[in-house]
Length: 376
Ligand code: F6P
Image 1: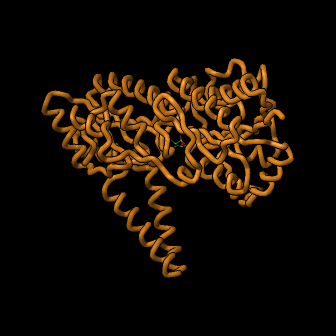
Image 2: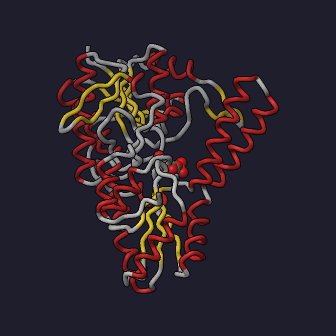
Image 3: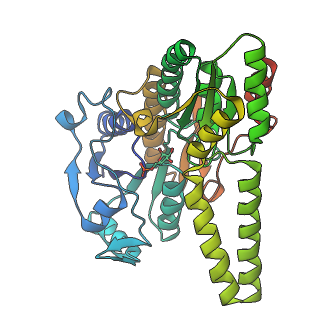
């Protein structure tokens, strides 16, 4: 009996999603004689039973398309927004999976999706996932699709910002996505020739950054590019955040509801402040260096448009490896990129984990050796 597989895309959109959908669909149908159905808008569409047939025409002409033809959402099966409340709709999702008589469900997503998919696997569904995110923070895979395209977009932006910084003798601070990891800022900062690169993994001292910029001025370079990961923090903010986290954990351990509430409010305020930290850094650098300083926030531009060749190739490799695993009846795994190939990794080794930039990573060493300040 031909296998019947469902596909959904969840979490932030990313270049390469449609290339992956295409690879899964074409190989499932053409190589293994399977049937394929898509669910709209992530786990929400599976809960609401909103589907789209994925065969023939639907899979043509989408290799180069940005975004996802299925739509996506960040809605979680166990915390589904329902009329102003959050409800656990896992059982509805499990029922819909069985009502469709699916043999497998393929979930394309980042860290959050891997965790949600693992929960469904624990409910007995046959799950296979692919690692997708421009942040490149999915654990246990060499790389996620979306990262290479975003890297090129951010690098090109830094290239363009050089001309205005040079012309106006300015510091240009460019905020780069990455949520709470620094892969994108570090990679684009190196590729774009940034003079300073600040990432969440290395809390920075603004005085060290200012001194690096002043040294450049003394050397005759009266402009600088500061690439900042959106999750980067000053040492002071990182310490305050750590203290609030510890206070919350201690209150929870002691069952002290009042202290826990106070710590949770402090944590929330600090996280909200984190969103303004790049603006604050911009003002501080202008004050400390005397150079005009401007901020550019790249935002969702980094997620837009056609995937790079590398991401199309990666998405196709992982998508076709996915259907081969389903054909063999291998479930409960993420299809991880490994060198030129792919290998199945059990979801319990992926769920809840985040791949941060190791402090001894070769990219960190390379940046330092070409004179980049990492703010420490
Ligand atoms: O996870 C990808 C990502 O682009 C992060 O880099 C960023 O912090 C987040 O999504 C933005 O989320 P949203 O698109 O929901 O605003």
